[in-house]
Length: 396
Image 1 (cartoon, rainbow, N blue to C red):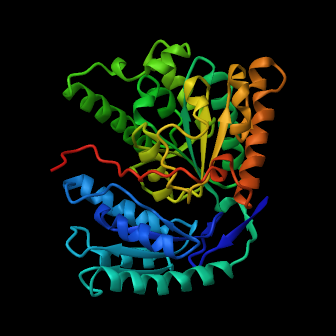
Image 2 (spheres, helix red, strand yellow; image 1 turned 135 degrees about the vertical axis):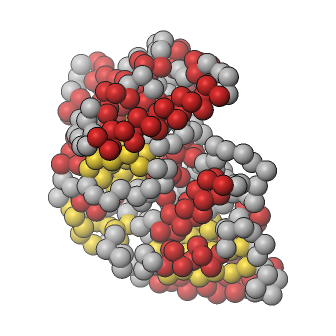
Image 3 (cartoon, rainbow, N blue to C red; image 1 turned 90 degrees about the vertical axis):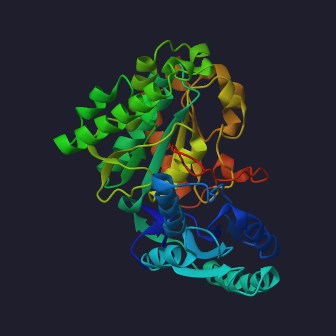
């Protein structure tokens, strides 16, 4: 089975074709914003990374910057910086270039000040946009797709509507040679051994369990009860009573195929199949991790409740328009919001459709969106936020 995508020089395939401006430090966000206001057709990927990150968080930030520029949905990249940041712009550029992608870099220090940088940037970006506009979609094998999966608005119906139908779509994609990544380490607690049994080897199972054990350790060291945040108050309103209930429903979105690997945050899967990625439950940080890992498309599976009434995405950075998101609604009680979702799974609850039928609908939506169809979220382009880099250590 094929879809229509943009073939890249390194053999990967994009489902979108963006020219990106990536600041190497949050201090350069204004530069990126200014350039984007002067050159139509570029995507400024503004973010909150600052020099206050140290140790593993700093290394993760560098990896995130490289992954942002390397994603197949990005046609070409202009990196902009100040000159005094800890992460060297040249190092980021060289690592992105390994993916055979056009990368240019400008900084206030090396390019003669702010205005000179802007003038040079306009010239570079105008040329990038012109070349990107010459690209056309061609038929590509579905094995070139990597999708990320997240659930939200969890409730008692998560495990019987939106999540298992998303899991069915995952199974279909994996069966055709694609890659699927799901995450949210805190939402494995209590169900980690169930998922570990699906691991393809002891090393994969142990790495998965270590992620959960470290999360439990971190929670304990903070001196808090996880029930203060998981399940959330909204989850409890939706009928969940324990973290185990929530976790069992959450892993349903990963389908039934063997677990090929347990990835670090932002790590790219190397072979076809299903993967778990260590990460936060916050959508803004999690989606950026998926994008960094090479996902061209994201699925957000909602049970329902108040989060389904946002009409956007809760805690989702709309600035990450480079990653299209398919929204799934699982609750018939929230059918009034159906038009703000891409696929409706509430018919499973009513008995009008099966999980397999809705799973097939989701899979067909994946093909359509990958071939250029705009998602509901992509059509709502007037709202933007900063991208949030994942940090779970000391901030200076």
